[in-house]
Image 1: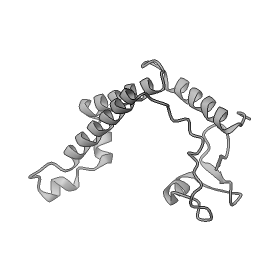
Image 2 (image 1 turned 180 degrees about the vertical axis):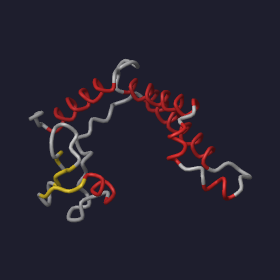
Image 3 (image 1 turned 90 degrees about the vertical axis):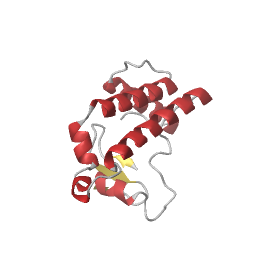
Image 4 (image 1 turned 30 degrees about the vertical axis):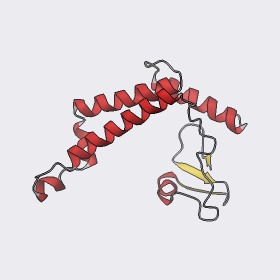
Length: 141
């Protein structure tokens, strides 16, 4: 898959079919139907963490899942209240414990990339793009 444009396009081009598709619909289909092994993450610049960094990322991710699951499905809640406990409502409320859990995971992932913990989002995107292009042999054009 190739992005439809450099500036965060909403359409993508399926490289095996050669036609543009809605990005959301493509992601939901999970893979190209003609070649199910194709992956747009083939050249994604995943970090090369040390075993300790890998453990810290895993621990932070598990903690985030545990906290989210605990909020979504608390024991003893009646079905009406349980039905209102959705991820949308959780992330709309954005409680401090959720923000802190995400910050811990972000810090662990940035450490795995050997990037400073205060790296701005735009700098992260630029660095990921540069790593991706280096792996794919592409250019930003």
